Image (cartoon, rainbow, N blue to C red; front, side):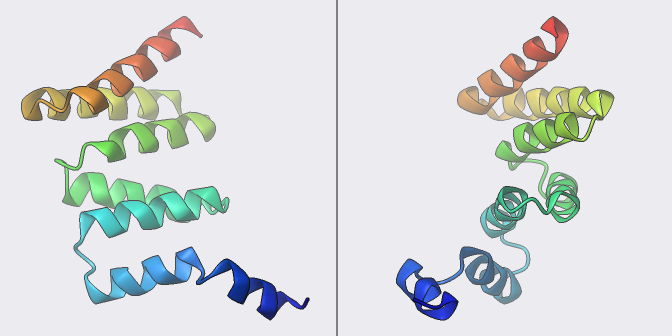
Length: 115
């Protein structure tokens, strides 16, 4: 089986699909978040970081972004940026009552203090 046949069996490329959604509606936070996650999954950390950072700036109420951006900062050896991101996310989650994301962010902060 050649590469094209394998691709067709697996279905459409998720990154390409997300990119086309993003082109159709560049302001959609859900698509931007998914696009950042897909870039991260593929190891495109610079692109993922840029997308997460832009999402935090443009859509600060999209609470899930803070955890993933903080974790990416940790992976990149930027612990102070990670802590600041987690703290900012905690504030947003507290304001919104987003308990699940709030719990994850607090846990991430606690893990950083333990290490």
